[in-house]
Each structure stands twice: as structure tokens, then as C-alpha cells.
Picture 1 (cartoon, each protein chain N blue to C red):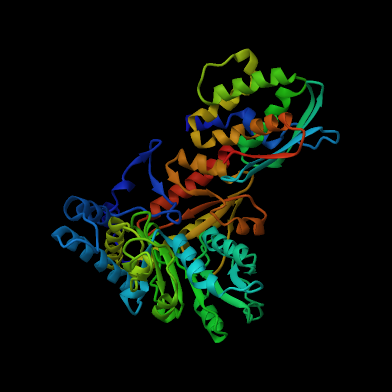
Picture 2: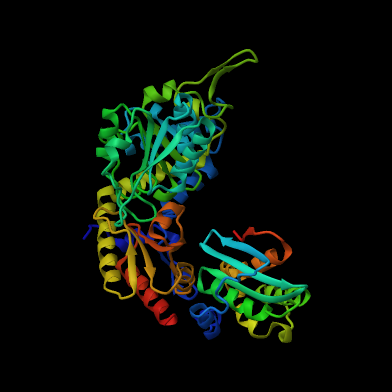
Length: 407
Length: 148
């Protein structure tokens, strides 16, 4: 049981207080995107109402204020991830762009045909496709750590898969489709023992647990703001300073230069070198406000409440006949993928929606995981700390209604 | 929930559970693959044309209740029809799903599919087999279509 006052927390999320098809909204699609607390919405709105100007240019007051707020948010992200320096925090559109940045600016220049990139069977498409593009460009090979029936990484042959040709290990900390928490710290240690750099896709981890890049000892860490109560279109890349320093820019444009002439352009220092063009300033400020909000609630409290919800929901679903949970790893984030016998997940989604219960149905941008289980899709309920036990009952009720309809 | 009963009518449930003409046709001279990547519906439609008459039509695949029932109902409705008649039926089905005025005589049993008009996210499930049979008839080759 957690220490959170759920009613008080739910009051921070105006969107939760509405009816869908005559039923109270039960939002259980948090792994797709989280809802935003009033504190984040207000921060974005306050910025546009009072402070909006372009950053890192202009001597006028608004520009100065915008710049200060933007850089203050960078400091919060640095602290949120426990990075060493603000220079190690690069704002991106999200985890996807951050992975593409590392693929193209860090890995590509080092790649020879026949080199290897190691990912896992559990990855989101965002941590598959950028590497496939890179392989097409360079003749490198994509190698995949297999998974087990319970939805965990099969690390039996992991040591052998880390070869002298492996140029990067890119792995998700938490599976979006199944919720599995991967043992990334141990995997990073093994990779580093062979001097193989590691990127961690933390998109599904940061909303749910304390992340410490120094403790993990990863080389790169990426995440999206919108899954952790911040606006869409903003995320961040953490990279070790010495690695980022040695990397060429990902995109060219304004703000990433010190001087430009037609003969020679001098790139800016970190982190500006990787932030070409006017960034999503309001999004960055919203991300900072989301981090403040999570700190105020307490990340340990968030984790405890979600674990509580996961345990209750798992127990109640397991008690139903004709329902199978897909992904049963002992270490899981609050994600439950499931199948109702005889009912296609897409029908499940429609029937749930008619009862106000919002879940994700489909392949969750993880088609290889679906293929592993030989299913086209799953229904997925994913929880946030603002979900209540009553909402679990609504979920169970929706499952039973679906079974009745299809009986 | 009343819209839901409208969508998942008995006929739909029956055709989902026991899809008609759920088989391959050995002498099919037209065939196309249909794919709705968003929800994972996948089917193959087989057509045996004799001149401009649909001598036989069948399908195989997997998907949600709406896509399976729609495909099953489609095979029943189109068997023995000319291409021109099939086209007219297809147009009526499409109209019924978008809430337009329809010719009930032409639509017949297929009217049960009109329940999807209250569920815009599901229209693609219901139209998949119809797009696919259209593609099959139009082409001499095995082609793939997608309703993403």
C-alpha cells in the first residue's frame, strides 16, 4: 500500500473527471501516453502568457527569461537522471529522435560492413528501425537477444552475443508491450567489460522508477516527456560528455554554431551542438514542471502505488476464467497485456470504450513480440499512480461484460 | 451499450464464430491479400471468375469479429453475381457504413454491417474484405492491399 492520497492526486488531473459513453473515464492507456497534471498545463500556459520569446538570442527581458527557464529545466533533467553535467542533457523530440541521433552521430561513423548492433526481441519499433536503417546504410548486422515465454530476456547466450564486432548494445529498460523490467545494469557491466557502449531506452522506465545513469553506468539514456506527465514532442538524450563531445552534429542549423561563414562553420559547445533550430521551449518548460510534480509526489511513492495496482489487477485478472495474461515476468512495471479467449483484442477495445475504459489494443509498436507469441495483438491495460482500485474493478467489469457479449 | 448490441448483432457473432466460405479455392484465378496493420487483421480473398461472373469467392485469415463477419457475409453476397452487380452491392455497403441512404433490396442481410457507422475506428475492419475482393477482381496477379 502506498502513502498517496489518490483523490487529491486525481484532482490535479482535470482530464480524468469526465464521462465517456455515459461512464466515468477509466484511463488505463498510460504506457501509450500519460495524462498531464494542472501544474504542467499551467507551466506551459504561463510561459506563453508571460514569458514567450526565442532563447539564446536577443538581449531583451523576455528572451532572457525564456532562456533561463529553458536551461533551468535542463538542470532538472540532469538531476532527474543523476547525470554529471547539464552538457550531457540534449533535448530531443522524444526517445525516438534521441535513438536516431545516437545511431547516426555516434555509431554510424564507427561502423564497418560486418560490424554488429545488438538489440533484443522485446524492443519497441523505435529501438529496432533506426538500427535497421543504419545496417542498410553500412552493411552492419542486427543481432537480437531472444526472449522467453514469460516475456523476459533470454540471456543464456548473452556473453557470446557480445563480440569484438559489437559496436553498441541498445536495450529497453522496461518493455512497453509486456511491462518486463530488464536487468540492464548487469547487462551494461558485461558490455563494458568488453568495451561495448550501451544505450538504454528508458521511455517506459522514467514514469515509474528512479533512474540513475551513474549507477546504471550507461553511455546513453533516452526518454520521452509525454509518458511522464509532460507535453508531447519533447524528450531527452543523456550521453557521457566525452562521447557527445567527440560526436559530429546530428542536424545543422541555428543555435548549434559558434560562427558560420561559407568557408567554415564552427560548431557550438555541448549541449547546443545537438540542438539545431528553435527548440520546443514550452515543451521543455512543461517537462521541467512534470519533473517538479513527480518529485513533489515522490518517485518512490509513485512506484509503490503502481506496484500495488499491478498486484491487485494481476490477481483479479488471474481469477477470471478465459483470460490469459501475456508477459508474466517477476519484475514488471504496471503493464498488463492480456487476451480474452475467443475475442479479438480490437473488439475488446471497442467494448471497453463503450464502458468508459480506455486501453490500448494492437501490436503496441512491438510486432516481433506479437509474432513470438503468435498473436496479432493484445489488449493492454497500463497504470499510472493516479489510477484507483475502483478503476481496476471497472476493468474487471469490462472484461466480464465482453465475455457476456461474446458468450 | 445499445450501440454495442447494434454493432455485435447475432448475425455478426454467428459469422465470426462460423465464417462461411472460409477456405482456399484451388482454381482461383484472382486473389488478393488484405492487411490492416493497426489491429492485425490479415486475410486473403480468393475469386474464381467465369467471364464476368463470380463463380466462387472465399477467404482465409484472422482478425476481429467485425472483419471476419464482414468477409464471411461478403462471400455469401457476391457468389454468383456479375462484377457489375458486385460493384453495386459494394457501393451500397460502403454507403451503409458511412450513414448514407441505401437501397435495402440490394443491401439485404448486409445491413447488419451498418452498425459500424457509430464506431468510426472500426469502419476499416468492416471494409477490409470488400477492398480486398475489389483488388482481387481488378488484378490478374496476387496483390496486397492495406487499410491502415
